[in-house]
Length: 145
Image 1 (cartoon, rainbow, N blue to C red):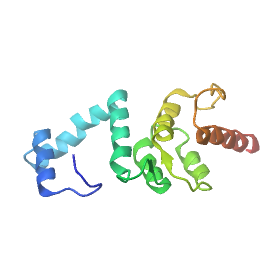
Image 2: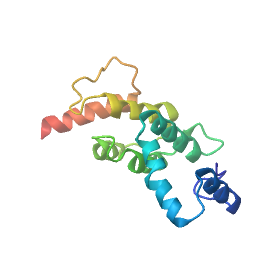
Image 3: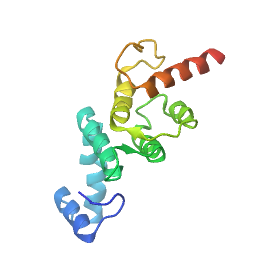
Image 4: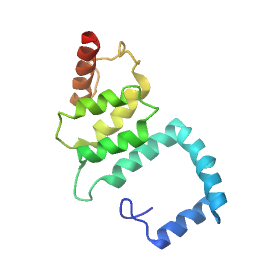
């Protein structure tokens, strides 16, 4: 429950360790590799953590996250979970706008539900325009290969 992204007061750090039941480096390693890993492997808990990461990294007075911040979150959180992560990040190189929460959350849904070859992607579905544009980009890329 740190108040500032990537900054933990001593009190916040200690409260976090107590909450995990950690009182040594050995137990911290066990908690990180055991319980926390299992929690992140649970799809619903991962979704909640993914949402938390967005909200935590959003500037207090902003409704969206800067594109550069979103890209780093995706690199950290979706590696191994989104088959097209590298292509998605390449696609975003030509974009400059911020990322609204809806787009951020729906990318996780896209990664979980759309087939790797995107054959089941519903162009008439309620996907954000950015994801629609990505699918077109990916299909053009695949056709050119």
